Length: 251
Image (cartoon, helix red, strand yellow):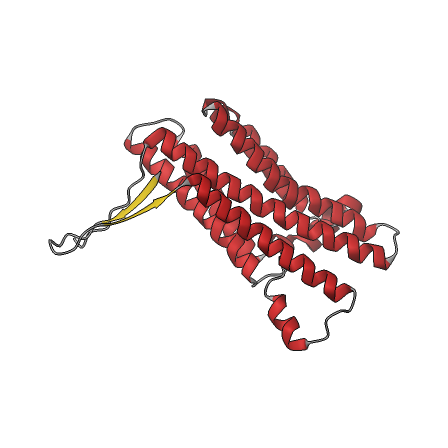
């Protein structure tokens, strides 16, 4: 179990304890991710086939679209990225207290996920597309040209973290790699696929249907990748440090 305890230094008050099961928490994250995706995709299909004509309902359901900014799914995606950054920072702190290895690697991972959360909230990567498209004359799979610098960054980080991954317990290492594959496969891989679809010679009707399916699969893979990563971090904390206790005092 991962324990978060709030302690108040007053004799007439007892400490409260919140216990979180990594497996149960992972299941909740998966259910939320799948739920958002199903609701968003169902609404998109109803709109494509013209089965809903209510403008008021449309304004409400737009807030559940996984592919738009400032929606409930985008807020949720930002939140779980921030949670990942926080857990990584906790591991870095605990490792420094125990004089462990690879403290800087944990800190940098925390910073990277903080950036990803900011990017998710502000869609920073989209601002790179036009510039990178002009520089590289990109099209086809690279139509959304922001994937070019981000792909280079993924490769760079991967190379820098080879020894770090090798030192992790086998199960944690495999879960790290699987969660990363899900997230990067969705964020970069499927973004390249939809870029190819946008520049291919297919009918508009087919493009709309395929793009909707691809976009929702992409977002689902990203959310599931981060959910699995959070589960992995919680497992690692339990395995390496036992209970994680956060204490708040009034001094």
